[in-house]
Length: 410
Image 1: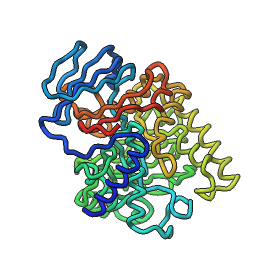
Image 2 (image 1 turned 180 degrees about the horizontal axis):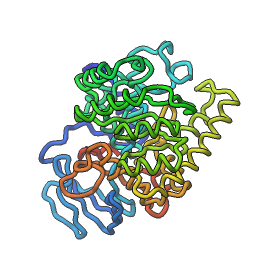
Image 3 (image 1 turned 120 degrees about the horizontal axis):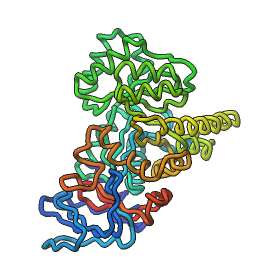
């Protein structure tokens, strides 16, 4: 509790210095707002002018196109800004930060547990202020992920809603039998995991280097039996195909996927979460923090070019479900919108990009009836940006209002 209060105090001080608002009073059943915006994007591809959104007790009560009177409600006038659902980022690493040595943190960084938690809380704050109201943490954050998830849910610290895999099913599990892997999945659920993350190929993706087809089927099948989704790190075409055929829920990265794998995912209803630029550009921009050499930078530039080409083919694949995930790591938190800009440059329409990061993202998380859409009955996860992102996606960089679960943060 003391640590959570310390985090809250420090973030509040930082917010005051930056001119943003971070109230900490709990949202009650009577808490009410009327939000007026010149334009609203509903998250499903619809656009409406001159909208009044009534929020009560953390949920959207109604959406109107004429002025409404709600006794005791606070009125929020957004002027010419565009209102839309909070962004959902399906792939984030909030545990990655720059340590006291100016390097990407590692086990031997020398940072104290308090410093590590404060850094992670800072990442969550930056992400929320960028308009991202829900994230999936899929990098093995361990117990700290659970603690931060719960602290955000309780309103102790400002941040996006967190779904966590706790850890990754990877190298340490490769020699396990299928039955043992099923037990591991059940143990992760018992520990509080929201999702199962597994590694099906090497980072370079040249070969499928991890699990057999039988093992993949055991992991993803048990996850489904336990009511959990399975996210698969799959770079190579072979690993994308194997994970899709194994019935896994969602494929991450897929940089070397051919048209055949893209069509297979579409046929099987497998969700695809590719990354186009942010994670690669972040490594290039901050090479020193990651101890990258010139050859490493050249490789990441090539990866970014290849990812953009693959994404262009993915968006032209009929029926393929594509969601928004940045793979945000140290020094990329809060820059999530850069990925949306790159996706549009690679051929996706601005509205399709927004839908992938709102209603489509919510559906992929199994939360399609709760978030990702501005409609009566949905959680009040709302943001506003300066400009109309359905015409100019760069407007997503200019967030001027943030509300999560009916609590106003910006």
